Length: 221
Image (cartoon, rainbow, N blue to C red; front, side, top):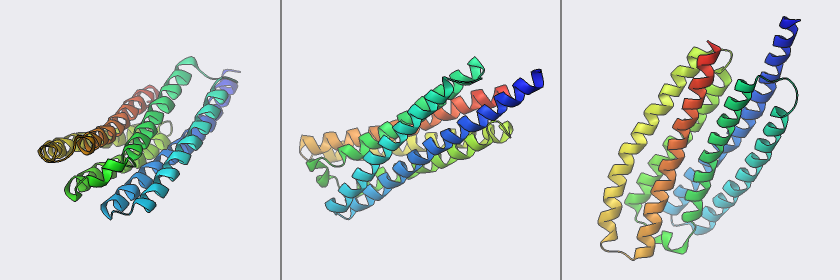
């Protein structure tokens, strides 16, 4: 009987992990469109940038729908309480990544953002690229979290390394923003500073997701 319950539990785990992958795939798409939005900001193409923002906005809504579905599935059937708690933390922390990606894109849609110089936009793009790379690694780690937990732990280390890289890029970017702030209007300066912080926060949440993955993977060894 015990093996039967264990089999049912593993089957439920796989079902939830499949939903978690659908959730992170939406966040990956969001991160990709943030890069495209920044590319259009660099080209000073506000109309195309706006289209990218609309895609990000819609993708976050779709991610929210999947999140609610995951919670509904976790509320029913057989599931160990510890597994349930870890998976809830995984989804909620990943959801924070999506929120900060949308926050960055929303700020870039404010009128004064058109005054952000190319040098700073390049830094924002570099940071956004790291966030995108981290979301891809999160997906890889989730795929391995139960089947190959040691591999999931190694991927989590890569995400942590990317977060450290983003921190360093932000320091350089912040110095350039502050220098530019001395000779520009306050609204544009504030937008640039808030945008770089939102992108850094997105990467910080990617590292937080990696920590949750580590917790689940260690219990699976």
